Length: 362
Ligand SMILES: *Cc1c(COP(=O)(O)O)cnc(C)c1O
Image (tube, rainbow, N blue to C red; front, top):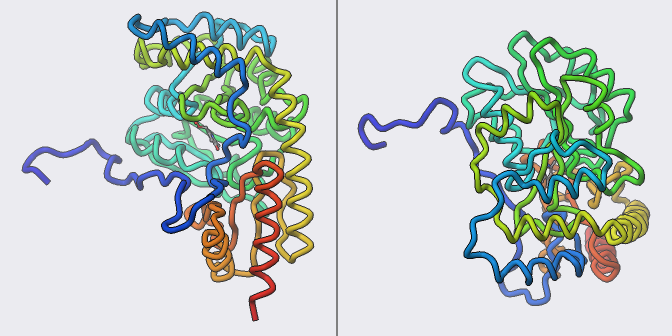
């Protein structure tokens, strides 16, 4: 390292985030099922908003995001003053760690939790702490037992990625009620829209002062490429986060697309229904082939193989047939593959390939 020039504590602990692969050398006609993207893309109205926004990109974007916050608030029946928008929910996670955790503070999350929690904790100089899950499900007792007086943030994704499992509102409420003073519970609702009539935890945010919710436009809204997320929490927390937020963090194109997307709930409903149909079909078909999974509440299935060797071999086999899924050894699940629910033809290709894989195994 250049003499004397050194990064802040924690930075060198960060292991670079690995995104889902998108290509396979020498294979045409690949289907990417490695990043939990909506196979149908964004709604027509969102695409139209993007085209329209192109004409005005010489102007700086809104700094307060009032149009998008109002659209989100009206759609979900929330208070727009309690909403903050970010460059993906990743940026909201970053703001939370930057604002509430530093050296000697602890950021708690679950064993198979989303990798950005650890990365953002390190980036803030805080100490990441992992609590065991119970059979790939968030364990509230383990989280409460792992709390100390230094715990500042507790992240759970509900439904969780990469497990696809979720816990009920009573359990989430028990977690919020049991946290030490000075700790904020963050409910990551990246997959909340895939659960019918689920508020992602918004009700709990409103009934307590130590709960915050994050949401994203990257999953069911099909806008991952534009990077838009939002957070909902007590006004006092929102005020703090707005101090570390850059004034122009979201582009005009992103803001307009998200506003159109959130107002098109008919499209969301259609995607949720189709996802549930194909998820159920794929999970059942895989189980019949000897590849079980936990009941998923999200847009992917965590397929369990006999051992890491079989999971790796199946991953290679799928890849050779142009099907890119996600290995999740880095999440402590070496015997599993996370498979995004694609459209019907993609799901059928996955099942056919896993069947062929199983048949050619001795
Ligand atoms: C995909 C995902 C996100 C979304 O991140 P963005 O920055 O909004 O794209 C957040 N949390 C979890 C658990 C996810 O799987």
